[in-house]
Length: 173
Image 1 (cartoon, rainbow, N blue to C red):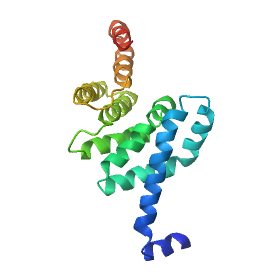
Image 2 (image 1 turned 45 degrees about the vertical axis):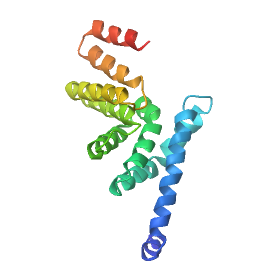
Image 3 (image 1 turned 180 degrees about the horizontal axis):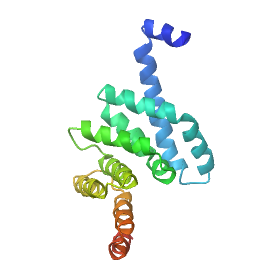
């Protein structure tokens, strides 16, 4: 508390927050690759340990209208969020999407994360809306993601439409 109070009264608060944000953009970018390799256990532990700081960086970026920075962190953590059911990241994705006035490069991934969050909450119609919006974003040049197919398939399977679920997975391959 003392250190925070001293930082707030100094002229270094803004600089410190920018350094914090830049650090967690790098962490998320590195985690995105690390979660797909032999370092996965180390990255899972690191994200778990630093989840509060990661969310703080996203929230601060949003509060400063630095939506590309917030989107970069959210998108970098999407593998972890979906595999580990980190619903708070889906909520942050929703907030970034709601604030974005233009299509971000990560827009399709954000819709996949938000759609996954809707699926987790049982809101399958909203999940499908996110999938459709994510596919539109891909057609407009957003970074493509296979997770949109995954959200669609999960929604289909959970409501008992195995044919649609299997067809969606086959389309993704």
